[in-house]
Length: 231
Image (cartoon, rainbow, N blue to C red; front, side, top):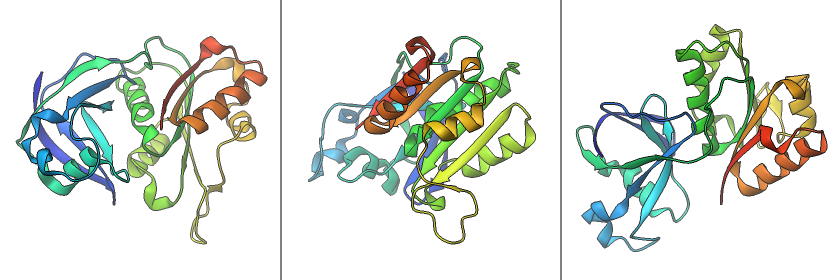
């Protein structure tokens, strides 16, 4: 499937969103792939893998959000303005079993760029007026690292069924919000009754596995814990 880039949004200093023209029939949480072989400029690259597909969670309403990673060839490539508005990109998808497919109250647990599918789940719930609760706990290093911060805070302030909790692990003195990592005590204090929710976790493998194990210890069934991990 070929798509044209219609908008590029700088989310943070090292993260940007590429919104595409048109639409795709996908479930929130799923991803598309982009094969790097379609970009001849990458043949001159000196670091990283030069071939093969890259997977990106679909950003609401139809796009991808890319965070620059150390030694990340493709993320560096797209963030240095090699893909511009009007360019056409070949994508494949949607793929993935990490998806919001049945209406349910959700607790969304994210770290870093793991916010992308969780943000899309929230937007889908609101767009389709699904009468459920969504509680997002989102961890970052610093305030400037928070992807979609303005959007998330606006959605939370305007919708009673959406709650967003930011927590920072390297906050400076200007930060008045919560500090530290997401842990089971924060999850319980936010959700109150764990049995009411399905849990979606997206972030680094260590982050996801730790939270999944804590939820299992609290009696949450494995069927109610959905996880997408990377790294």
